[in-house]
Image 1: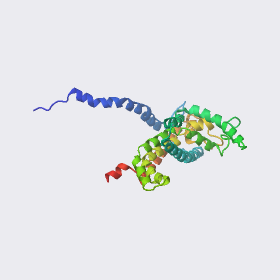
Image 2: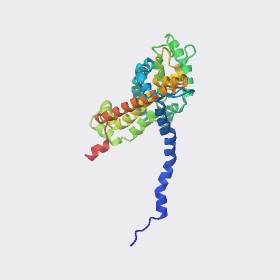
Image 3: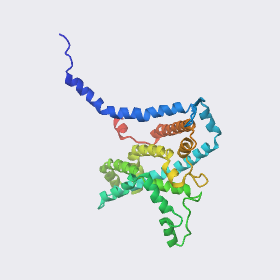
Image 4: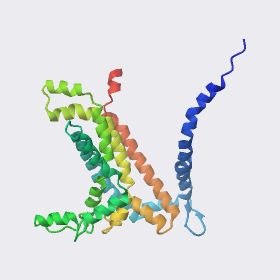
Length: 302
């Protein structure tokens, strides 16, 4: 007997999922993959915004090794990441654990702590610029009530980086929400069994909560690390890289190179180098995650 031909309805049913995915795929190719590959092409040229473009091969990449401004910006970015990433993760986890408690008005507190992460960067910078103001800022006003001298939060090389980190932590609501979802996924029976066995709060946290939360911690670690290396808005709008370039991060240096000095080729090359650096760091974190990340499904399969 001849093989039955597939019904038109079945073929249409197979195409429906692809039709739903198609807009995202088109947008991803047009607005992510396309510009990414084009910037790689640009990085091989001396590419002024106006004027003749000259092919220079890998010269833009080799120039970075002699560019002291770029190397200094990398160091500043590493300092920012070293401060921002651990503090962000610790505070987000602490807030998530507090909001995971059964207290009246729990939903209100969750909303209040998450709302700051929805504020636009420009509004955020405006708020913190006022708070950090040397003469009229709320922070120095509070210090004056304690008879403590005013601090030049944004103008002092000793305080500028810390001030940028604190402003960046204002939006940790997203990280906190992911931790909270992870905490909700831990069965309460495990905590009850640990309490019955005599385990105290500290032992339950390090022996039960943290291991079961480690996959969520890994996700937040990688995303926060990427965000730290991509930080531009705070340094650009809050301190403009100052004072004395103590907050002059790589993203800001790339921005200045591209849109102030119009060296699009060199800026593209630096962008690709930083992309590879962040990719390498993320891969290293993922590579060594097997040493400290606990997956419940893997244990059940053994």
